[in-house]
Image 1 (cartoon, rainbow, N blue to C red):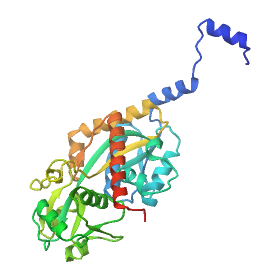
Image 2 (cartoon, helix red, strand yellow):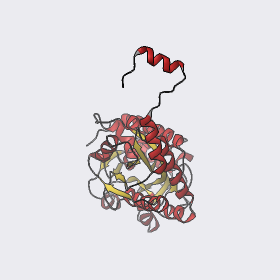
Image 3 (cartoon, rainbow, N blue to C red):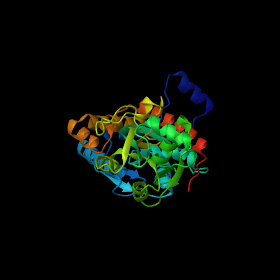
Length: 326
């Protein structure tokens, strides 16, 4: 039906409201969410810490919401394949992104992406933060962070720092250390395991996620100097945080959930509440702690601010280091 201008003005004058039916339908669907399986797209291979944690939260959400949450691994381009697929997916809450510090790093590390991570992904909920450990080969003549900084300043460019690749948390944590300590560690990226050369002394230092560092430290094969979180870790209570020596230093891996930007607010809110409820469950919380991290319950706004802060911080570190995607 077409309305003349006169008829339209008459309706307005009579107080008739114009209803956005599509918005009402989206809101109604959000109240029933989920009515079918939802997919969590993970940009890392099966068996990685991201994959393991994603499967734990997917199982928990399936139990709480009565619909299957399925983890789907889409690897490639340093997790950008996964991110790109979710940015351009239907914004209905049934395609979610496993968001990590890698997304924040990639925003600057890659010169040309087909999406804008901050503008294209809506924050849903934080899940877990995992600290790294600053650890050295036992032959390095340093038993503390101040001793290592003094040693590094006396040997600029001569100390090798290993990582599993450009843009990894190991790499950027080390570059943040370079920037804040005023030293120059030489980055050596590895496509295969970094540990044989680290154990043999070919490389002298790494900033490695805590879970895969524990056995080496406990066996005395590598020497832990500090953790990269803001506070001490229960797993390594004798190691101080790096921030005690470099105020403001913090570098952690972290995991969360994101969704396409236009996903209905009611769906995002429901997911945030359900995920935070899972993180508050003592048994589930302990399962996450067993992975070497600390649960990260945040509001939607807090998680959004956190992502923006991390993207800004790692952007500065990437520019400082001059790193480019491989």
